[in-house]
Length: 218
Image (cartoon, rainbow, N blue to C red; front, side):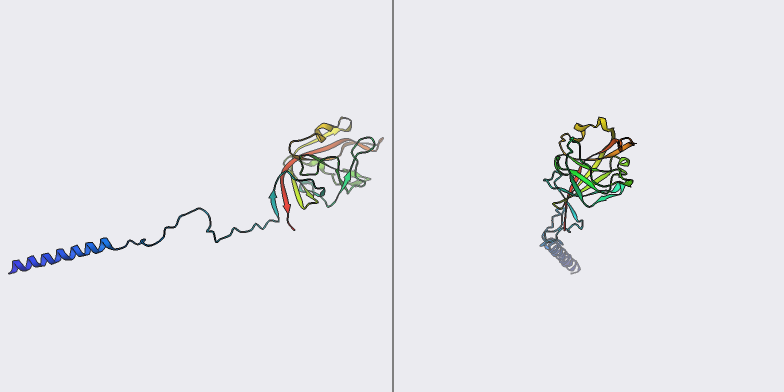
């Protein structure tokens, strides 16, 4: 009888073990029934990108014609809120502004931001008053010039060259000649003052090329 009881008990233990193994195999895994999530590298579609807080947004580097309205040169402390129009004298020379605190744009060239060299001129001084371009000779390559335009855009130029020329050897083609991209020329007088003529002997010319154009928001 004891042997029979032991056999029956062993059978029951085996049966229970078989039932437990079967139940384990049929149980769902922890992730069964959960939809997979794919990492796309971007935010969910329902989340919008934050709007930039800057008041200037980049636009194309080559701009349509628009007259310059203001000029800023941070490196030498220049800010002019109005530019007059300059043409040519009867002798074919560039006109100059009427006073020390005025800067002008040459209307015979492109507007700042168009392809070609836009030209802005101002006095180094006038009747013992320091002019807008009094410190123009101190500019260095890498410094920037910002021209605000009438169409509410701005053109930012980076200086790449600063030269001084005797007025008798002014390089007209280099200053006014065509360029493949938008450029800017800043012109004033420099060098020694000739008391016999009442003029400076040289011209200072700053050459700059377009760095970026901006749309200025209201």
